[in-house]
Image (cartoon, rainbow, N blue to C red; front, side, top):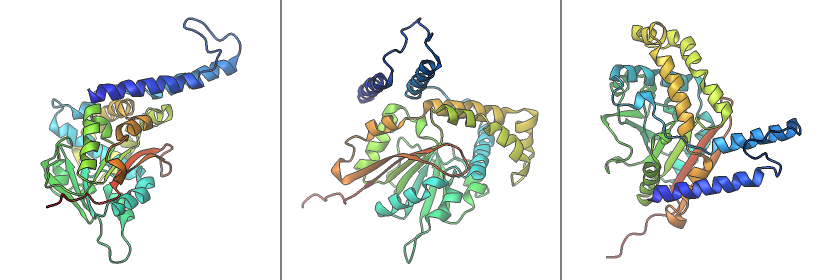
Length: 321
């Protein structure tokens, strides 16, 4: 019910926001812009804004239980290759380092890690000055990558990275897994209720949390996503360690490029907007829990990284004896 109420609030806010920017002479349904190109361009901008506020509930192929495990491993490996090539999340490293420090921990629990995600390139950017303990990252996933879990994946060879061999469901995190929680490129996999539950649980347990997405409902982002299969085609022969199966499922039977293209577009349509994130975090954790929401530009990609960062600003009061 909370999810339904929040969606209704978001939809009302989106309609109100759109109403503020719609020009007075916007044509009614069935009418056309006979008065000139400027009004037509204005209408198109409004249409794009309205589209960007719509979150669709679609399914990604490689998340489905029926999708073969060996093909899922190939897709996850290709996604890891794209992350390593583009270094897409480098712009958020300073903000993430600051949040981990303010949360008062040196441990990070990464969820939906795939074959390592962006952590191999990020870990060096989080080096701490002086005698502070280095950040230690535990990588987890509901479907652990076999190569990563065995220490053979490129994404888990960096120092201070450890892969959990057990399946970890991000909607029911075991109490034994502590640390600052991070999710890269996967927060959109949550339903509204799951996303809100994850953030509430993090705030109530006084865990720091960082959510980061390069996918978004911006048209430019979706156009760039379309080129990810091309990047996979170009880079696959140079991926190490070499595997013949990569060539088979990339060139002979191009399942991997198709899934990258389809799931990439679906990811964009499923992502939460900044207004969605602000609505979710409103009031969570009380006054002694701090939230930061926005976008960071930079890196090798021509669009922003959406971020949601939270951390406790005061220790939880212990009950009196």
